[in-house]
Length: 262
Image (cartoon, rainbow, N blue to C red; front, side, top):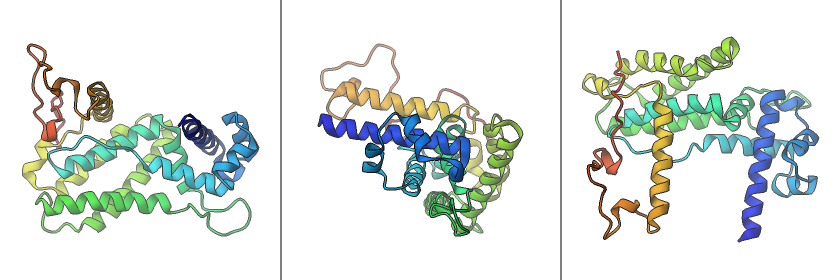
């Protein structure tokens, strides 16, 4: 078990180092030597996990696409908003996400004119993920009759790609969250049932609250030791004055007043 844990840690260290180098230098200019120095591992350790620089780049792309579980929401459209807000947050703070986006835009291999093996992979994954959420929203009656989930997914993925690129160029993505909110405020009224628009939370701190809820849920489960929050264990009383969860699946509703779609 200890050996397996060390192997996992080594792999994560290599991925983070590679992401930082790819983010700073681009795929073509990045070298295995620089990644080794940044990760502080031997060449043998790196090649144990990744057979080539291309495979390492694919590992970075796969890692940045895994955003982890998000708290379930009452509507699928809120989950769509949450994915966009969290992705914007990660682009500002997570080198794996930034590197994955950069690799998606890196059209060429280090040598030759053939497309890079990872080029286009993140785009299609983003489109598929958005399309799945929109299809579920459609089945739940949340979308207007004219909306085609696949077409809307491609529109949103393309628009997000454009605004994040512009934000990166103009201000190193400092205003990306605001730009995503503006995008959603313009798109959502054209696809969502009007009755749902006032319920959608587009607060600027939405991503931070989602991450805090995820950390809090994990901490509560760990304390319980049996898959349940500590406060839900038999014989454990809820502290005086504490509120019971009010959201779907026991997720507490945010205290912040939602920023409704205009």
